[in-house]
Image (cartoon, rainbow, N blue to C red; front, side, top):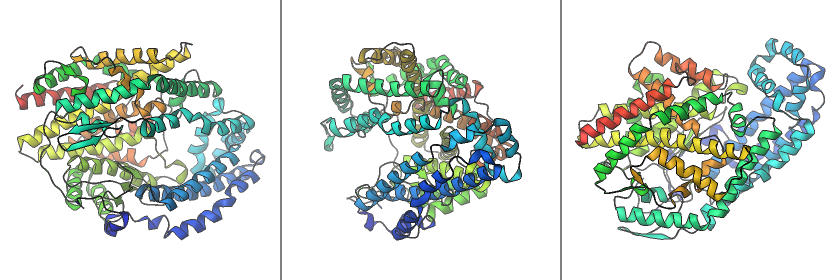
Length: 600
């Protein structure tokens, strides 16, 4: 699918598109089922006030909840996937709009459900849970009972639900401001004039031409400097929203609120930050190495993302890439590898870019469908093979979760999801490194893996530390201003990059451009995820007894356990800082290996 122009959707061969017929056979089929689903909100309301009267009444509403949720998930998944095919398609956009309005109505009409379940005497509901007919709802209900101290009255819950849309204002405004209203201008490159934007900034930072990197960097942050007060106010507003929810839900802090759903103790968060802090000297050593390799007098912030090893020439058709993925997954056994291979070749994946298609890649399925994979595959980009196996990790996680759990406990958390995807990337890295004698390719792979660990382990931990410091300041009654926010971030830049880096006056404005900060206390999951996946992949690759079987227990556990417990099934204890330390040790090993190979 290599063309001089981006093809239209209809120009993509059908065998290169995903097969959504397992969701709905046609758009008309979706419309018909959607029309029949319109009575779901009123049906929810009809159960109100009956749950505590008998176990049969509770079971009836749970059965209805499950059947409705399966259908709504299926409707939503189809609408979302169709929109991602071509975001300019008005029919797909209208379908998604209808779906969102319907979903909001369902949420409003069912907001009474959890408070009413919690109003039932705890000993009574626990006795009902012992009955065999409640077996598939046991985990679901126990998670609800755990939330009892933080669930409000029915009326209060409804008010909170009605406020959710307005509470997204800071995030929505940030997206519109930075993606639409802010004009970052254009940059003159060797290939002509190119636009500078949030999405293209990273491309410019990878340019081999230092003058282009410098110009793009200064021009980019000059625009953020222009809007610094507005964006700082938006971020402060987002933090205030987090603080409001924490207080309304009777939590002691914003961080505790965010970690509660995963039953994640704050000690895991603190262990991550503390362990990474202890290992920053090896990161600083890497930046010293980078400075020598780039042969610059001063290492600037715009020098830390350019690849140290030039891209290697590599071209693989989709089918060839799938075969590489299949071979790399051999340590997980034939069933896993062949299942993903067959899926990638036969309807799971939407392979290539077309006009209007959503950028990037993702895995998305539901309980009753295939675990679909959205890609924009390029044959001449070896990183796209890593993307393929990464998204394949998510899809196979879903594949095993669906087949080993009832609907009400199949959905795993983001914390666990990041382990399954990066685990697969580790297998691919080791496979490619072991199967090439080309020194340039070896160094490219090692350098790329180093960059991946920096971006996922160290950088995301820096972000996590920033989020904690910013929210802690607010919780202590100290105002979040543009100056205080920048001061926090400047201190972290110096801490994580070390004094080897020479920062610009406005380098600390980076804190104003990170969209993840509007979903607070989320990014630490990337760091813990790669730490766990590195540990688990080492166990499997070294043929440690029981390692593969334990990993499949993790993949199959779905949402039946909280993340710490499911990862213990696989063989890692994230409450132990040794897991993060081992990831840091692997980083140090790779840095030494690259230094030796490049003889610097």
